[in-house]
Amino acid sequence: MTSAGIAFLFPGQGSQYPGMGKDLFDEFEIVRNTYGEASEILGYDIAKLSFDDAGDQINLTRFTQPVLLTHSIACCRAFAEHTDNAISPNLAAGHSLGEYSALVCANSLSFALALQLVKTRGELMGKYGEGEMEALMIDLESAESLAEQHYCGIAACNLPNQNVVGGRAEDLDALVSTMAEKFPGKRSTRLKTEGAFHTYYMVEAARRFRQALNQADFKSPRIDVLSNFTGGVHDTDINAIKSRLFLQLFNPVLWHKNLVTAGSAGVELIIEFGGGLGKGESAAEKRPALESIVKKTFRGADSPPDYLSVINLATLQETIAAVTTDSAL
Image 1 (cartoon, rainbow, N blue to C red):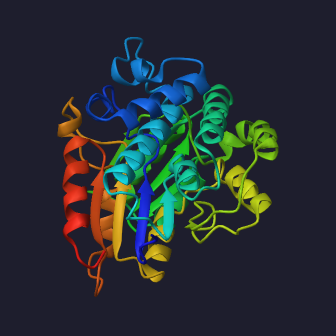
Image 2 (image 1 turned 45 degrees about the vertical axis):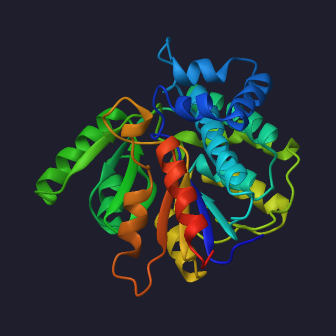
C-alpha cells in the first residue's frame, strides 16, 4: 500500500560513524542479510568495516559511500519488514550520496547496482577530487560573494542561512577570515571530507564517473524522487536521471529546495533512514543527520509534516509504534 503524503529521506556523507548498524545487525536477520549481500557485491566485509573500523577507513570516501548506503537500506528494509510493508512513500529524497538510496527506495536502482555505482563514485571522488568544505551560517548571496572572492564554490544550500562552500584549504582559510571581518558573529565550521564535493574540484571525477552511469541499468522510478541538481522531481526518463546524477557531482546540492518541493507536494510525514550524528560513540547516542534542517525548513508552516526516523534500534521501535498506532496511516 502506498501511503499518500509520506516521504522517505536519506542522509549523505558526514553521517557515518564506527559501529553504525551494529545494534540492528545483532537483532534482525534481514539486516544481517543486507550486510551479507553488500559484502558479496563489494568484495570486502562491510559489516566488519562498519562496526570495527580497525583501519580507520570509514571516513575514506571510497568506503564511506557504500557504508552509508548499506546502513540506509538496512534501516529501510527492517522498517518495511516490521510494518508488513504497509507504509510506503509516495516521494523519496536523499542528500548528496543519499540520492542513490532514494533511487533504490523508488526501485529505479537495485541495491546491488547502487552499491557498485557508489563504490566507483567514492573511489573517483577520493582519487581525483581535492579541497575541503566549510559550512557558513550566512545567506546564499553573501556566501556566493565570499566564494567568488576566494576561488571557492557553493557546494550545498541546506537552509536560507546555512550554505556550504568548497575549495582548497588555504582558500577556505582566507574566506573564513574575510567572513569574520564582514559578518562578525556569524559562525562557520570546517567539514570532515576528502574533497570540495559538489564544486568544480569534482569535474574530473564526474567525467570518469559518467561511463559507469551510462552503462548502469536504471529503471523509471515507481514514485517521485527529488533531484539535488534541480531541487525538483526527477524525470521518469532514465537518461535524464543519469545526466543529473553526473551534474550533481560538481554542482550545489539544492537540499532546501528539495524540502520545499516536498512540502509543496503535500507531504504530511517524513521518515529519515540511516546515518547518525553526535559525540556519543554508541548508536543509541546518535541523532538523525537531517532532522534539524527538516524541522527548520518547515518551522512556521501552517501544517508542518510530522518527522520520524529509523537510524538505530531505538528509533526503529519508536517509529514502528508511531505509524502502527496512527489511524491516519
